[in-house]
Image (spheres, helix red, strand yellow):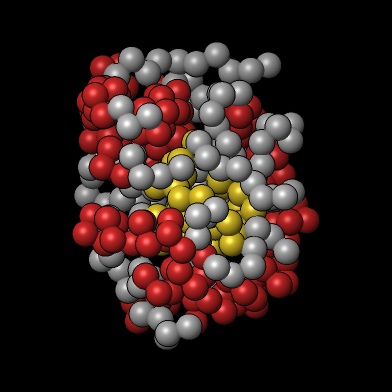
Length: 311
């Protein structure tokens, strides 16, 4: 049975204790809150926002299990699959299934970021992962300014492979977006198309089935409304939500590096009452002095206050 991710799929952070261990109590708070929001379709763990590659194998499995338990099976858990080689990634996906993941978000082999990929190689990655694990897979389209971004033919071929049911598109090049998204729709009408353009969601909002975003950690209520406005082709409503969120967007994602967004997301969750602090793992570093105050002011201006965490 194909998973239905036509809505919001937050990519949760991984909370840590101040000593740097996984904070399972905080995972329970975060996962149960996100899972209680109508319109949230899944939680996507172990991605960039979740510092997934900074965790040991055992910790990765613990995180999958903890988020699965936090939602009590009400929504699926999607695991980021990040291993470098096909066999490594396939075994990672198999372990994820055993830990309770219902789907996998397949990252490109990281060597491709620097050197590019051989024609046909990405297709083998998805094939080998699915044949080994049986895990339903999401095609992950990286930004246009990386060498791991897939050309249209590669995307079309992967989208047609057995086991691939959705694509998370973060191409960040609107010329390509307006060419490639319609082509994917035409060739694969059942493919679920999810935007991950956290820092400028509005231009992509009217062409997609949903969002798969780290932003979903901190503003899930408003992002569910944004998705509804996009599906209704209601630009005025979508633009109003965008403007309300803009101070948050700037303070979380308009920073020197997109990686800083993970730290800022944790500060956002402090403001929402889910986390007590914004501890991250190196090589991530704390934000500059005063950033926490700026982020708090942005959340206040957007009306994003503390939430009632489900019991």
